[in-house]
Image (spheres, rainbow, N blue to C red):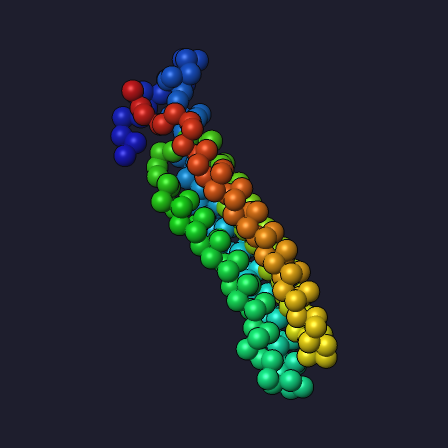
Length: 183
């Protein structure tokens, strides 16, 4: 793929066009895109797993006292699972744009997109888990707390949605740089 590159890139020529392949499109640029892809799915899955586990413990404890509320209080688990879908969407979009050679700018943008959705999803998953655990336990003792719990869960979920929106905007900007055409 890089055959004949040595004849195109002259290390003593300071013309930017001749350095295009080595400085603007290094061989390691796709690594940053792959790390963005990985960060998106790993961090959102960690947040979703924590939110599911923490809420599930609360649902199990609540089910001992009020088994009639089990299905009604499964909402935190569903909302935690949605967080992982955000990471999956961004991860698939980033992986679809990975290629070699690619501009370093594109790799950094993809890394930023993956980290934005991943870390926002991690934070949202933690919030959903903590609120879900306390909320379903409180709902078992006082059913009027259910609406308040759902509202707080929505605000926690929207944190992950903010990360998704930023990641999608960043990913659309990844193609704003010129390609890596070797002349």
